[in-house]
Length: 138
Image 1: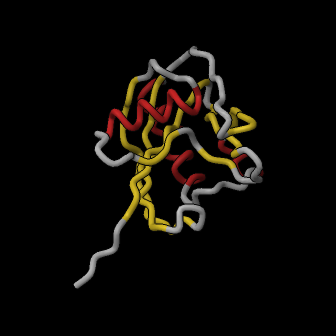
Image 2: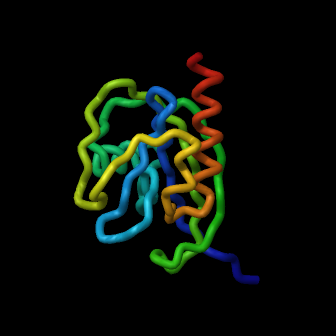
């Protein structure tokens, strides 16, 4: 019996003032969340910290909770990807984008339909993350 191999990705949901940070991929129409895949030999938390530092220059954050996960086929990776959404907290550090992204936006839940996301589960994940942050912080 052969087993399907997967890549593992962690995506950060950063909420400030009921808005979530989303990023537009350079040269593409699609948007996503900060984060990325775990490299061979990396531990989960090391990979997550590395991705947030690389993509948005964020080094100080608190990992609050795992929101949800999804399994989907990524055409760009040519592989199945298990994506975990992680609610993080950082209230004031400046977000500085890497070359991987050309634009950032802080959006409210009712604006999500205006953005095409690379990850099929992104909108649901963001909604759950915003609701969880309200429960925890308000």
